[in-house]
Length: 480
Image 1 (cartoon, rainbow, N blue to C red):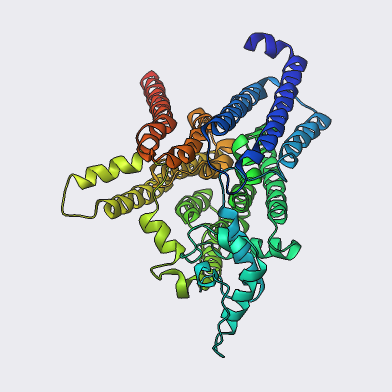
Image 2 (cartoon, rainbow, N blue to C red; image 1 turned 90 degrees about the horizontal axis):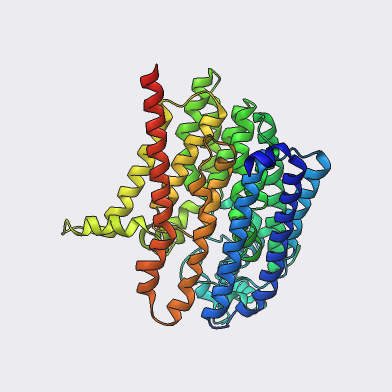
């Protein structure tokens, strides 16, 4: 089949657009199905299985589209049509009901708090659930927040884990504020902010691919990715804010604009903390290029300090989101419970906490080790960053589907193409069985079986890829 396609590129191009149109149809069906998941509806197996099937089908089509890239030579008009199809996929979901998700209520609340000039890290939403005014003269902030809670209607009541203070850094908070200014308490306005960030991600990714001499159709790895479309547009996750600075790190590094690249990495840290793990790789890359790295490093440290400083006064309190998330969160993880079990067998230690420190040590050590011999090529830098981010994702106590989007910028630009990680789009939809199983008090089925089915094939495929790469490298060495 590949021979026929290689000789008939117009046929491959037609197939690509057929697949894109099929993806669009599936998104239309998911948008129609989403009404079954309106807030307050019970989690039902039938509708959940239909959603998972549609998600899986979209993943198959998406992988098929990526496979076709090597057979397609598309002109500017054709590429514009590709972009238009991805935009239409998103617009079909812009007014859909979020499927099994309520994280965005926290975003809407934080945006309102900060828009009124109040530190969003200071108070947990639960303090204002009862809408009872505080009559003490010194509590002006509390009176404002009580009024906001009343004005928010259902938002304040739907914030998950309301007793926990927010964990989101300053750039994320700024995006929440923009959403509030567009329209208070509006999911649609938040989705529009995310869509603007997605457009920026696409622009930077296409520019990066062009600078590397790679086919710009590899931007489909993001733009047609069902994980991006469903998790960001329908389920309204804030990963849309993280992707532009992550792509910008490579975009500016490829142009040897080191300071801009370092500032972009600091911007990513200002959305979520984990990108700090990529700093050793980036600055070692600058050093290996023979270009300046000290000024970019200082810029990185200064910008990180400015972005994280507002969180410091309340960020380490016991009920802060940062502390709670880092110390107790555990969901949809395959490898981490195995690590915890290993520590538990030792006895007389806190197995969960020890496992968390162990994972942090492994991932940070991996980042430092990979930084030692990084080559002065952007593809190598991207691939090494992918290894670090992949390890973080696969070993993390929380492996939510939207976290897999962290991998996308590096999957699109690194070498070799790591198909097992791309295949996560086929297995992660099983995560949604968690909800009907939880309603039936069958959490152990999800934790012991469904999570294994989600991730064990990925681990095995990665192991097979690593063995194949090792053997081919060894054969090449022996041949020399």
